[in-house]
Image: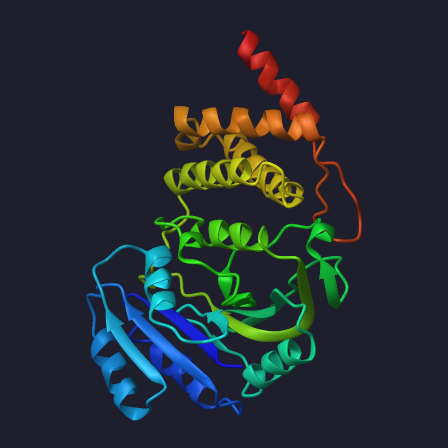
Length: 312
């Protein structure tokens, strides 16, 4: 099966070589590497063209600046693969056997609609393995059994061409990957989880990337996005997983309020929080932060606080 590796690029000249070399070192050779420059201000596109000259499987494009969502869509439209691996420009594929193992999994099990796997996070000298799921066992599962938070980043997933469509990419710089993830999953019947680490994320606080730094404004947009996706999945079993995300954002909001961060007290944020509070209360959402203990976060006490504030 041909694997399309799609990379949105923005001001990434410092990182591109690490990524490209991780692809060129793969023992599985039936792939294409599609690099899409989102109007970088550095020499990213010049480097991309040099890589394209090195190997016919590498394709370099440039386009007007739109953010990561539509940049991935552009790469998708230019692709010809059967499977899709979305890699950020400052990350890389962990080992040289990754693509071969991914292909073998899909060849052996035609029922896999989406593959989840673990990732490695690097911050300075520190490395940490981030599990794809806390409680889900390895193997094939029905999508209706998915009752955990799904990490929105597209890098730790493999998608099928037969399911992925242009409409699944969203024009946003905030949580656009959550939109793609859940809208895609809603079209799936089965998912496969492998506890192997196939993807490495490099965190550089000083980098200028396609994603925005966490701010109250970006938080507000995150709330809007998750509410929009929740509404779109009106009759989907995936709603519970989204509601776990809502609970996480809900607690983040109250942590900021406890710290007297006035920027989180905007009308836009408060309106979205009220909607999320109603959803969590109605569905009695339980969050499992450790994967070992089922802890009801203090949602009802917080909801009570909100109700009292409304009456004041």
